[in-house]
Image (cartoon, rainbow, N blue to C red; front, side, top):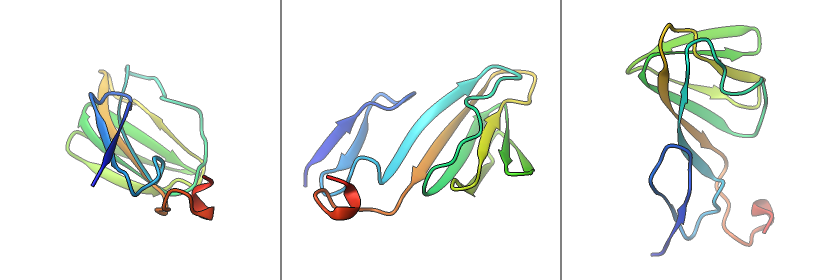
Length: 112
């Protein structure tokens, strides 16, 4: 089995099985200072999960909000408008995992 090495924010190395497309799952580590958002509301295909290492993270999903603190996690439908904000009083650190339907390289679904 062969693996590809990818660069992802906050990780020293990210290995992807050679039989999968690079975007079927993505993992990265994010940090945000108190009161800051990582990005504006957006949508994309798949499911997105968050795990908070330290601090506080508020997820806005449509009209709803969900507050997470250290050692808590949540999964959302990332096809809905979503945004994450550090609503705590100190910097936070969290993992983001985005999963999409797996496709084999070269298949019509992979776009290759």
